[in-house]
Length: 122
Image (cartoon, rainbow, N blue to C red; front, side, top):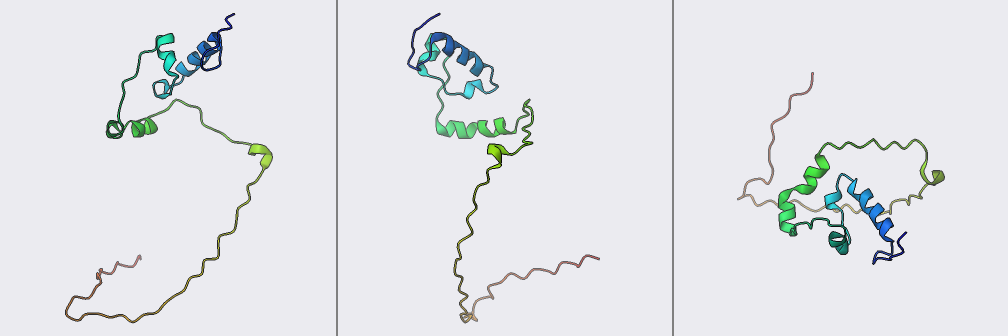
């Protein structure tokens, strides 16, 4: 049993177990890894990509919308022992209606769009 302590604070065996667990994940290529793992565990380095290229690749939306082989999340019992969060009442925001005269320059068209009436449902 190795007692080597790595920068992560884990032993070599624990790091290897964690790496195998991470590699089993469907999105392993997206997960951040410690930099020294790439050389130590012979992981191929990932290509650097800037924000503009990432956004243009639409990668996040493709991953979000693709079919996933994951079991559904079923919550059939209260979480945290049924603890409820207090909901604060909304602030009483004063609303003041101000009436002002409508001033219309007769030389310009009336500032409205006239829409045709919709037929009433029978």
